[in-house]
Figure 1: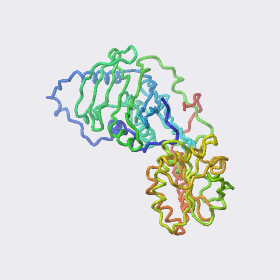
Figure 2: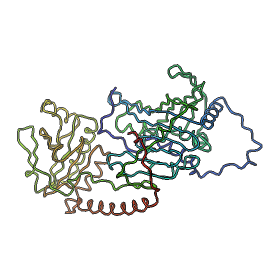
Figure 3: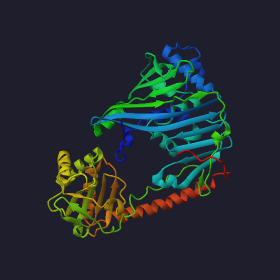
Figure 4: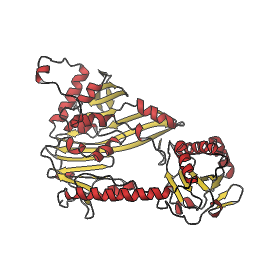
Length: 473
């Protein structure tokens, strides 16, 4: 089994946002009007065995004075005969009424009963530009204390399994009500076992497939959640992925055990930017080279000739760095479509730049690109100019130079829309438009608006005391 290569990315639409939807509804965002007492007084519902198990599970979480878990979300799939696995982690610790420690993907949120503090770990934005949310802790912790911040919602919604279901079970006024109402049917499956623990399995049939709860028969705690994957599987099929399975494991779930106060301590850096709500920093420039001339570089052709920086001057140049990986294969297939569609008079030089080491022979590379259907001129970056001059983190990466040799476009990673987007940009460049200048001006404007909003929310945040424990990453 292998873990997914860093350069292979699934589109965000493929991520299961189902849980985010019904957790938000439970937090008070639903349009539904709850039935009045008069409407329900005469109705005494008869519960099925499956519904009784769910009701007992919900009651266990609602009545728990404390709770702790450390869960793992696993996405497994098969791609080109190989089995891959991605993992995400979240952990919840709660002591009622208002002590909470939540670590969900990139989000860490801690309430010690007096203050709520939260950070988002995101290297691409320097951890949200060093922001830390600080607010007064609510007297009783409920979901809206988390979901009133849109960026906290986004971080959890875009995690592999969406927001932790345990938040819904512990903090909602009506746990699972929206989810069960959306289900076509709720049924009891055959029992299952997780290690030595016998579980009742309850399946809720949803529009995107079955959602299965594995409920410990003895403790009535949720030990495993199988997510519906119909839509996810359709999205991932574009990347030749099959046998898609998404689960969350709650093997360490415990209730009504003592949790030390240290669990709810939180270290605040002296340089942190304290805000009452997260502010989204501007999207960083894809490269510091945007609009600039790179240092000297050259690549080795398979015929022994060098392709130098100066040889590319006087025309637009498109360079696609690649390696032997499915993400690079997709990029080269798209690039081939783009090249073939270019008009004959287009002054565009197109090259694929291989990053494989010299131990891979020229003949092996020719065989590889032929198998992928690529006929673009092929050169090799044997001296790592992509890494050292262009600061390319991984393949595939597309770099476009203008006729002066300045970097106009810089795109890292797989882009499913490359074949439709890049030709339009090349036409603009050919018409004389300076795309880099426009992107730089846009970035400066976004930065100015961001700093203004940051100042506003910094003034509304309470002064924070320094405490002991830093958030986990």
